[in-house]
Image (cartoon, rainbow over all chains, first blue to last red; front, side, top):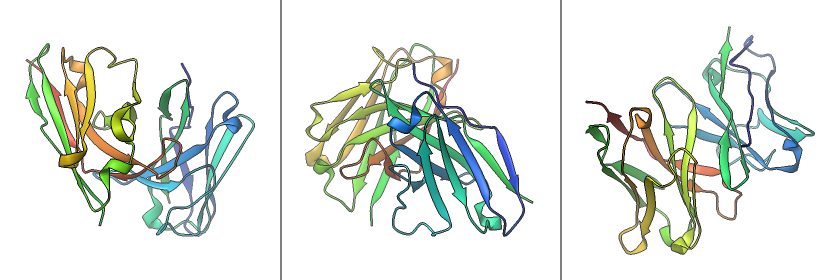
Length: 106
Length: 120
């Protein structure tokens, strides 16, 4: 079965750029979405089709996907961006989520 | 505003059954593909099932195949998940999630979730 791998945690200082990666076999051939989940809240779509932002998502969120790695980039990270982030793709007739990365804004 | 409201969760014994519902509003339900996603408290997201608009195409995660059944009633603007032969490992918060229009299994709206606890 298809798997997506994320680092369990990442840290960034306020105002700096955060990079959260997601790896999978030939992931660049698939569309990747990213979700933000705050504690006690439902997930929120922040990036879809690799690099598109839904309406209402700040421009500081961007995405890329090539080769075996997709990356969520948060520019000018704010304290409110501290959350869990999940990548997601479709493969082999199933939806697959990465294990999630907890972003700490220190 | 788009709203998805799950219900039907609760405590059930191993081997038991439960039916979850998701009532939607704020969009034309019949035009959208829908999904169920679950999350063990404190853990990651796990996709459970997908149903296309009109219900012609259905997919399940291997972990629930043969035990769970997804369905929809467009007249009632509702999505369902019938769960049978429940196991302790099915304990989770269950979310319904709407596919992006014309999207590739990407979920632009989620409900608040309903907790299912399988325990004796």
